[in-house]
Length: 346
Image 1 (tube, one colour):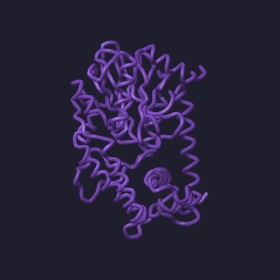
Image 2 (cartoon, rainbow, N blue to C red):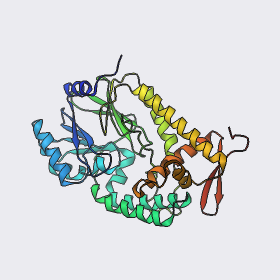
Image 3 (spheres, rainbow, N blue to C red):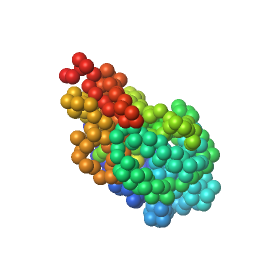
Image 4 (cartoon, rainbow, N blue to C red):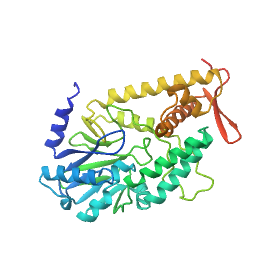
């Protein structure tokens, strides 16, 4: 079956009562997709960032469908990033709606400000260990702090376990934890209609960045910081699990157009990550490098706001190479360097 054009996929989803409401964000990614599910209860997946502009756009989009914020009965959070949960508290307060999210995300969402503070401390420790200079670390932390107000704390009243069913009057959504892009990434599969609400797990036009994030179950005041998760390893496992889903025609993403051939797209993403790992391996075969030095070799002096993204990208592929026995970690005081394993310089 050939992939459907995006407009056809959106029309099919709308025919099943699932409507894309694209809202503005202040971030480089552009619009964020929220989804209105016209069912009982009236359900909204994700909320957009905590801004008056996004709220105005949401109210206008709801009105075009004959609804108000106050009509919402359920708000579902796909994951912890602020462009997806920023307005949840405001919407829940105005509507009295239940708020559903992955059970592991609930404590983090309830203590958003403290969680962000702990996340920044964790990120600083990762950046220090992998060679990002102090001036860049301080600039990145300042940027992170300035962005925090686009998110807000929210109370999850309906925690969801991985693999459970979220049942509305006319449909059942299978809840599937797909960590990698964030620790809390969750997709919602309508098996009957062969539609997945995929959020940022799989996006057509950009590869979801597996960000190095503090584990959700780590104490806020952990000292020393928790061990660094292998985000790309987790993300590739999640992609492979999604690839095996054969009862999917459309994935509705958190940004951009619907995905209508998830197997082909996932296969291309897997090949891309293999190519990136091979490129990094060739660099490390020349001499040991920190992850930050690898990022500079690959992308030059990237913008300050992108330094943590590129660090996460390099560390993810270094983790793959270490797991494959092609690369080893070498600790030099506080800093870690990666080197090609002896006898594996091919």
